[in-house]
Length: 106
Length: 123
Image (cartoon, rainbow over all chains, first blue to last red; front, side, top):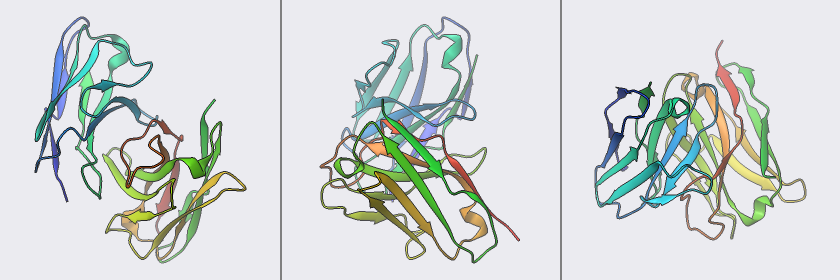
């Protein structure tokens, strides 16, 4: 199985900050990487698919980049509603796997 | 509007069975890949099972293979997860999730999720 390692595990930032979460795959997964945001008590929400494509309706302050084994998700000008836990997910092969999550506090 | 509503969770003893349902509206389940993803409260996400839109091919995580069975009823537009021989480690919130790539060979990504249903396996 492909292991996904996110860093940091938790992050505290201020409104207006720019933050970056990284995700490293245990093997080359090309661009087959997605990012989700999950708020407490809610289902995950798709933010970015195929490493860099913004899902419809997601604010443009979110962006994704990377390929191969190293990926990142950046939030520019952090807003209070961006709190939650962020997960990366690979789909290069079955089983698809998620990172352990990055908890964002503001 | 796309909606998915899970039901069927609850408390079950080890070795017992449950059937989860995910009633979909606003789209046709047979046209999309559909997965079950679970989450132990306070922990991360774990993919459990998937059924492809085209062909209805099924996939399972090793941890549930042989015990959990994914299926769909096109006439009811509903996804199911039959859970047998349940273990304590199956305790989690179970989400159904839609893969917009209906013709994909396996799960790619999930654009819509249900609200989740809690399964607790305990004596």
